[in-house]
Amino acid sequence: MKRVGWIVFCTLVGLLTLGCQKEEARELSFSDVPNVLFIITDDLRPDLGAYGDKVAVTPNIDRLAQDSLLFNRAYCQKAVCWSSRNSFFSGLIPRSLGKKINAQNTFRLEHPDIVALPQLFKNQGWYTRSFGKILHNGQDDPMSWSEPFFEPEPLNYAAPGNVDKHPIINRAVSENRVNPLYEAAEVDDEAYEDGLMGQVARRAIREASQCSKPFFFMVGFHKPHIPFNAPKKYWDLYDRENIPLTEFPEPPINVLQKYSFHPYRYVCSFAEIPEEGSFPDDLAREIKHAYYACINYVDALVGQLIEEKENTIIVFTSDHGYQPGDHGLWSKHTNFELATRVPLLVSVTNSLFKVKSTFALVDLFPTLAELCGIPQSDHLEGKSFLQVLRNPSAGGRENAYSEYSRNGARGRSIRTEHFRYVEWRLSDQTLAGQELYDHWNDLGENVNVAGLSNYSEILSRLSDVLASR
Image (cartoon, rainbow, N blue to C red; front, side, top):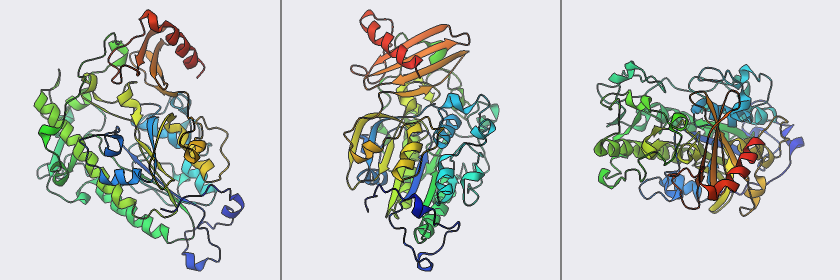
């Protein structure tokens, strides 16, 4: 892969025309102006070979990692689809997006005039397009795209008897009791919407690669989000008996269950899933098998997208993580490590570098802008980590911020190199509870040590840091 140069080229970009024209029709060459391919998945935690997972079969993402900076501690700003996606898309952290943002409303409702990430590139001359789930289901930002966004009609099920079924996404409703939580259908990749969308995106990338104008494409896969449906050939890559169950199935000791936990009713609303209580081991292992099959499905589709990567910056990440049984949860929607930590690969090198520093998804906006020589917008709340792309040993953030509220308390969290601190406050700012997890000794966040005297100094310091955010 051609190494992307860090060149300020604003005057050159100003010469770009609005259309995507064939390079032979142009007198100017823009070979030093990088393309950007931003790939976003849904509910994917770092269960990838490149991150050391011994079960995952992810040869294509692992291959991409060999030309990338791999960020070991990258975090979303809220473990729910619409807030996380609107955050990195707009450059604002969730609490700045506005109180009215939800599954229907984007950041534009309260911030109609800010320049979004792809819109910034479009304004500077890039040919911008969107494929699949970028914001939330059905949400769009027309002013960011050179052409209308492409998202196929929902194709959630493909097995005989299931084809006409449509799950109610992210809502625990009785209608889901007729819908399987997962299926392994004997079908091609294009039988599901991700495969169909990926085919269209792949063709568009090939066409755009022949143009003189650089492109900025965002491609969003729905998987491995529920329902965990993938072609059977991806299920067959795994021996279910070798898929481990979670190492920590119980809630953390001293955890504030009223605020930190929820009953994962969405998963339990699907057919043949117990509506209450923990899952039997055989069912838990089957669900994890389905989750891994979906990861492998996405890996195959990613492999098709990255064939044309000459002079292209490729970003691969997820909107948030997932907890398939960890701490007794089957979802995201928490401030825990496994819900907020995401994979993040940025391919600007010719070899793999593992970055240990802490980063936030909201940092991608200023980083990509600076990397491509584009003046940054004033509204951005992220921090460029261009210095790390140039020197992987350079330091990143001191901490990454995330938030998730529940039961009348606002939950705010910071993750430093060695600790996670969570603070819960009521609407009148009364302190409702604190959580502190020591990642020196407890990577799984199994013990809340906030009440232990030997952590009082750290607790006080991190509380002050969070108050300044």
